[in-house]
Amino acid sequence: AEANHLLEEVLRKEEDDVAANTALGELQEYTGRYLKATAYYSHALAHCEHETMKEELRQSITRIAPDAAMENAIYYLRRADYDRAREALMKAKAESKRYDADYYLGVVYQNTGNFAAAEQAFRTALDEGGNLEDIYNGLVYALNAQNKVEEAITAASEGLEAHPDALRLLFNRAVLYVDQGERKKAQEDIDEILSYDDLSDELFNEVMRLREQLSAQ
Image (tube, rainbow, N blue to C red; front, side, top):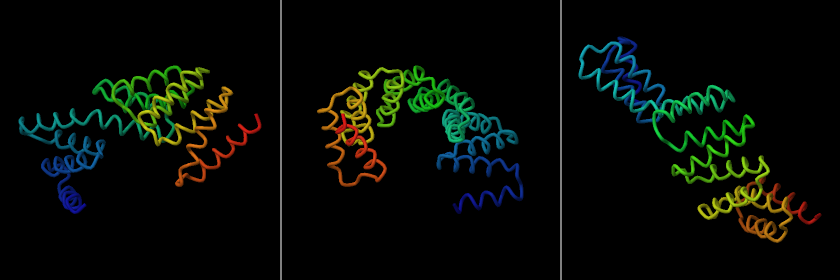
């Protein structure tokens, strides 16, 4: 924070200072603010006169381009601007093979009702090494939305093998079992969830409603 303050003081006196802009770019990069880092590097490049330094700045901009694209995509995703989010994610995919770009593409497709594309994106994210609970949950949702219930159960079970304590995934599988009339399996999942002492109020209430639904069948 102090370094950032001092460097900004330099820029208030001389906004085109190459060294200060470069240093601020490095600082923003190290703290995960890739869009700001790109802006500082670009400003430094525009006013740099030394070819060696110019090349280093170009390399820095290229190096963080996928991260900047991801940051941009998540910004648009949070604003529910799915078209721009998709554009940024495709840019990130083109510049670097990374599972999180496919995961967020899955979220975009899911939120726009394109469940077949969402399924493919989530599967690609898993194939690329993104072994995360959220990816499995997204895949389960996308499959169920296409009435691929058995595949959804399989995906949930695979996710639980990798993440045995993934309670949301366990709950989603229980819901699928209830819908399929698999009472015993559903009850086992419900009992497993209720064995945890640290359930959120939201999840506890959902589980209790599902248990009542199962009892009424």
